[in-house]
Length: 97
Length: 490
Image (cartoon, rainbow over the protein chains, first blue to last red):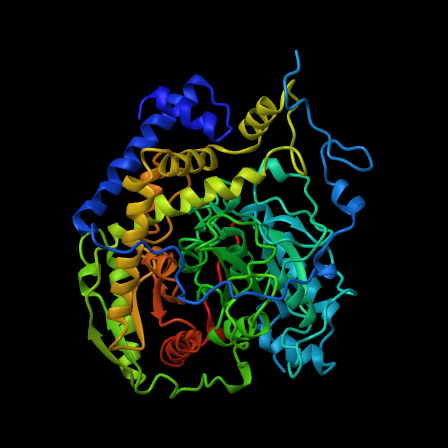
């Protein structure tokens, strides 16, 4: 994986990297990707993918709000890096210049 | 009752004595805190200590028909489990000052059973690692040799129990993060069946494998904690529907393993296995036969396929789960003129190198053009691995093989080689991929005094079999009351 690939992935993942980090990440990730080629020996072409270990999971439940599992607004906003008393505050999302 | 100091008591002894008014819960906590004062400068088990234990006036009620199982028992909690009003960092700078407004379900159940939560224990950042060296707040150290790692990612919880700072502890597993540190510190470490314990309030790493785990110094204590915490939780959609483990119905007496069949995958015990680990495996096999169990050979896929599959699936899930740490709603924020740079700068500053590496690997495995070649292939491999372990368990009650290929390694030994670090989990990952319960148990010491562990893997929801086998070993090999405690460095 070359530094340009790493830069592309880092942008997708929303992580800024220094030049030095980019180079090391490229080497480390290439080593892991080489290792995972060992899976090719298993001959998996006709296997069904598995996304959950139990056959029965996430059963439907009544569509009723659980007030006990909800938090008051002031409690939630108390953890925010920046807020007024009602909203999370963020920099401009749309560039209007 | 006993002339041993409180910090050497089992959770069962403490719970019975405090409930009967024969011991003071405050004094029991103080004895464990005195151990922490002695050991913490050397081992760094805790990120946050809670003097006197978390007060639990808000403890939820017990489920109908349950009796309190942990009255007065000092418990350490891995710092990726949410504790209301007590800082929960996940070992990450991005959550250094985060204080959860709610309890994880397992934390609430500990309180309901009367436990005293004495601190939040150190871990590899977001549970990503095998040594605690990836903690944003400095590593923990192995009390049996402080130049060595205690294992990870739940290393702090292991160290707390191994040094008598807590009677039992909670950790979490995604790929071996309870069993591997248990093996390195002379403890029992349980990874329950996927869905057995609620994940509500466990900060997510890889949701299809994450599971809360239990550290204990005896089979009876581990089963006691599992019984207190298990049972369906409507707040976790993947929580299994069945009832809690019935602790009082569990037979942990001398004859409990009589007639059980244990399968050993001999092919795993070849190259690269440390001699002392191989000897531990031999000792345990002989002890099981002495306890009336039958040992037979089974065959498994090479565990290299487990590691390859795991590092694609776990990183892919992590890249999605950790997207929530963005500097908007809680945690660290780095200011920037636009929201994209705010995300990038916050995550650059807040995450350590291993977390970044895994997020990038997972993003790559999921990205357009590579999905089928990496993530899709790993999902197929996961099915093959689950079928393979299931087939091996068809003719036996449990599988037995070492927890780790070597005893605890030196701090720094693998820190610059991510792949070498990943391979230290080579024997533990299969149970996580297949969703099966597995328990690491002590299997003696090396000539140099380092603990060695082996593990049992059972069919889904058969944690009872795991603890019966562990109890049988205690009857044949070492009474937990006679355990070899670590010696504090001078």
